[in-house]
Amino acid sequence: MNSLENKVVLITGASSGIGEACARIFAQGGAKLILNARRQDSLEKLAKELNEKYGSECQLLPFDVRDRSSVELNVRSLPASWSNIEVLINNAGLSRGLDPLQDGKIEDWEEMIDTNIKGLLYMTRHITPKMIEQGSGHVINIGSIAGHDTYPKGNVYCATKAAVRTLSEGLKQDLLGTPVRVSCIDPGLVQTEFSLVRFRGEQEKAEKTYQGLTPLSPEDVADVIYFCATRPPHVNISEMLVIPTDQSGSTMVHRNS
Ligand code: NDP
Ligand code: 8X3
Image 1 (spheres, rainbow, N blue to C red):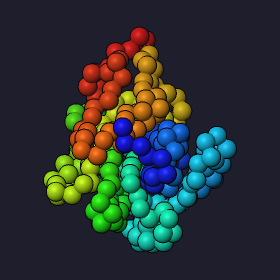
Image 2 (image 1 turned 120 degrees about the horizontal axis):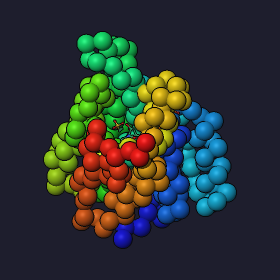
Image 3 (image 1 turned 90 degrees about the vertical axis):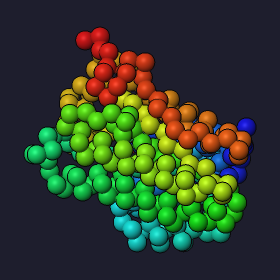
C-alpha cells in the first residue's frame, strides 16, 4: 500500500457529495488536504471538522474552476510546503436540466462544458508539470456511467462525461514514461446534491432520481478513489465503473416502487 501520510491531496468540489467524502477518507489516511469549491463557508466547516477529528492540515482554495486565471493564480500562489501535490482529484462537476437537445438551454450547456471539461483541463494543465518534475503524482478524474451510456435528455452532460473519459485516456498516453498515474472513476447513481443542482433546487424532482432503489453513497465512491490512490506506485487503476447493485446501465435501474 502507498501511504499518503503527509502527502498533499488536492480535491476540487470538496464542499459536498463525493468531494467532501474524499476529504474525509484522505484526512483519515493522514494526507494534507487542499480543498477547492466555490462555497468557502462549507470548506471552512469541513476543514475545522477534519482538524478536530484527525488533526488534518487543510489549505482552502475557494475558487471557480471555470475561471482560468483563478486556477492559475491559486495553484501558483500555493506556499512551497503545499506545492508538491501528490494526488489531484478532479471532481468538481455538475449537470443542469434534463431537456431534449433541440430545446436545450445554451447557458446550461456552457456551464456544464466549462465546469466538467474546461475546469478539469485547467487544473490538470497547471498541476501535472510539477508532478512530472517531482517524480510522482496521480490524477484521478471523476467521470460517470453517463460517459459510457448516453440517456435520453442527458445529451450535453453525457458528452462532458464521455470527454472526461477521453481526456483521461489521452493524459495517460501523454504521460507514459513518467511516474504520473491517471485514473478515471465512473460512478452510477450516487445520492448527493447532484440532482438538486440539476433540477435547480426542486427537491421532489431530485428525490425521484433515487426513489425505490439503493443508490451509492458518496462514501462508497470515496472508498474506491482512496483504494486507487493507495496502490503501490507501479499499479495504475486506469478506469473503474462503480454502480449500485440496483443499476445496470444509465436507464436500466431496478426500483421497488
Ligand atoms: P455535488 O453537487 O454534491 O458536488 C459537486 C461539487 O462540485 C460541489 O462541491 C460544488 O461546490 C463543486 N463545484 C461545482 N461547480 C464548481 C465550480 N465551477 N468550481 C468549483 N467547484 C465546483 O455532486 P456530486 O458529489 O455527485 O458530484 C461530484 C462529481 O461526481 C461531479 O463531477 C459529477 O458529475 C460526478 N458524478 C456524480 C454522480 C451522481 O450520481 N451524484 C454520478 C457520476 C458522476 P460549490 O457549489 O461550492 O462550488
Ligand atoms: C451522474 C449519474 O446517471 O445521473 O453522472 O447522469 S447520472
